[in-house]
Image (cartoon, rainbow, N blue to C red):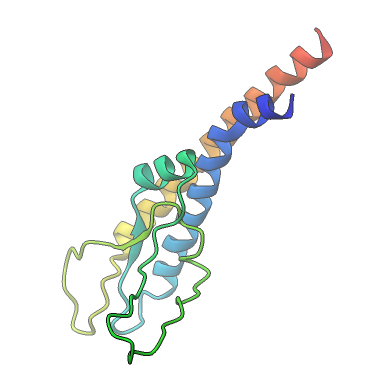
Length: 140
């Protein structure tokens, strides 16, 4: 029974998780709009969602030792990059800036609002699915 519930709700769980993580990335971009040399980041939602649904591990940039005398590298732990099933990417620069910052506030606000609406839509669909399951369980 639990496996069937997980199967029925797994789609929405993955979508909500990727949307929430994407929202954090966009919020970080907005927060760093005035930080010199900050590079705006985003995630390809389709790729991240596909990887989340397949259970694939997050794509990390892994440093490899090419010689025995090289120092071992530890992966960079970053709360925004951890657990992303699709991997974080730099956003394409629309217009250059003098300080090297690539955050375009118009793009970020648009993406933030779009992602929030899609997150809310996923919640509404999940709520509808849960109501159907409850109706089936109660036999009404």
